[in-house]
Length: 391
Image (cartoon, rainbow, N blue to C red; front, side):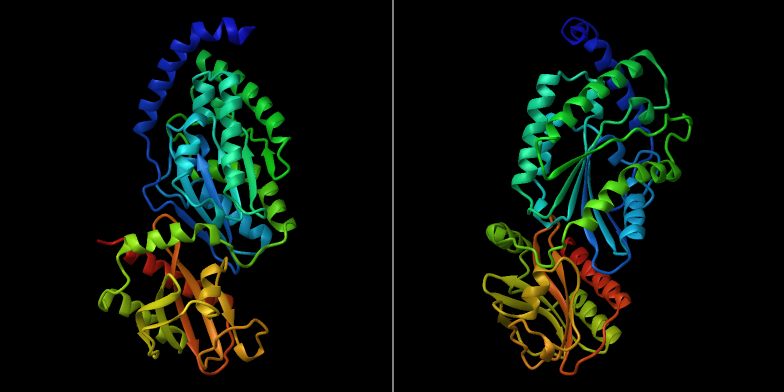
């Protein structure tokens, strides 16, 4: 009754409040670095943090200090593994626009997806009917585009007083509505066995000048990380990603880069040399073009291309982290060794996350491999990715 009679009368006031809040927030610092955060460790969990509100990072200039960085470190401390967080945050997104924004990203490559959506809907007093329809569409889209092993967590809409230091009548009204939306979300999520609802009730803001600090995001992360870590620890991990259905998209991403068939370039040759020197092995940067690995840069290797089928690099392309085999002669999987005994590789991704290539190091003799070396190889692969984004 309250929603049907009172809400239509006060929605214009709430829209004005929302507009003024947006203007105030637009003057605050927010992360200006890349929307990626990494916590060191072997076999990292890959997590997507999506939404508005808590995901945006107002008050700090780095995602490392904001919620994704705090979550990554706390998750790594619990699981004993590394953690890679990608961030898709839009301060203006509502539940109605979530699917359109998510469609631009490959959800299948994540071990977990955190959805933090609804702050704007609480402020705008979105009707329960619209919310119900939109969140079902969002959950349907996510579940249709992730593997069965991917954990999906819907974080509750936080109290608006936790997002904004001001205590006003519109804030109180939005808080009441966020509780209504959360009850509806919890009821809907209960019908999805693969999705978990995560309560989220951080303390009210108390520092209007500083707005939010790294300590604030650290506290917020503690409210979310426990169920996330539990799900990632309990669920059996799938080492190899299966993206056969996305092969056309992957190939299109490689074609768009225009890298295959180009002449050698010093920027890629340099990375291959560094990899060779760091690990005392041969090295290669290859791109997976249809049924072959085409070589862009190489040290101690003399193959312009190799077949995709059955190669170590193909397994590395599908691996969730570094794929390393200390002695290929002891490997039971049928692999074309090309006379190699040791191999380690890390997948190279396009700007939108499609796996387009591999940075590999290898030798004709077996050798040991460490977690620290996995981190170094990953860092070099990320350098290749950054070079791919340069004009």
